[in-house]
Each structure stands twice: as C-alpha cells, then as structure tokens.
Image (cartoon, rainbow, N blue to C red; front, side, top):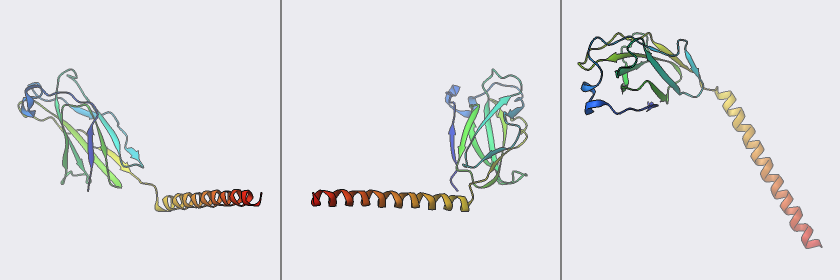
Length: 159
C-alpha cells in the first residue's frame, strides 16, 4: 500500500536532529483542529493541529496512522515540528490518526483523541457510467467530424 505524505509548512529544526528539537519540560497536550470525522471521496486530507498551551515553543510531533481503534499496527507519520500535513493515497474505509508532542529530551506527551478520516471512493457503477458516457461523446464527435469532412471533400469534387 502506498500512502503519500507531504509536509504543508516546513521549518528548519535547530541543531540538525530530532533529539535537539523542542523545549524541555513535560510536553503539552496536542489536538487536531478537526473534531468531527473528515470525509473524503478522493483519498486525501489535510491534517492540522494545535498545541493546547505553550503554542509559541517549537515542539516535535509524532503522528500515528492506524486502521484499528487499538493502534496495534500503527505507523509513524511526519515526525517533525510542522503544524500541518497532507496525506494522500488513503485506502477506502476508516483511517485513524493520533498525535502527541515530543520534548527535547525525548519525553512524550499523551496521545490525542483519534481523528477519523473516512474514505468513500465513488462507486464503480457511477465511474463506469461516466466512463461510458464519455466514450459515447467521443465516438459521436469523431463520427460528426468525419461525416463533415466527407461532405466537404465530396462537395469540392462535384463543383
């Protein structure tokens, strides 16, 4: 499965490595800006989040993506200091994301409440119907152009 991930806003991390990023002390709570499930028919979404307090400090964030409520087989996405991320290539169904802040010493905050991204691609019937209509329009256009060309050529020879 191919899942694309593009950082929406980038910033250079001080010290060059993730272990040097973020202030010291306990990491704050982080929450996604979207509270309701995100519904998409295209398989992509933009995720953004807010730090509950200490917003002005540079934190590193870990985002997990999972397909089950327990996050048993979760994958880490976007381990960095950005406050938004674009995800694409999501499979049909419910995709769960959660986030937490990470401090400079590696201390981690609590995981946020999961954000549901529900992907419901257009049905096959609709896709095949639109494809069929497109084919009919293409064939009708070609027939019309060829018929007009034939009339034009045969009209020149007669005159």
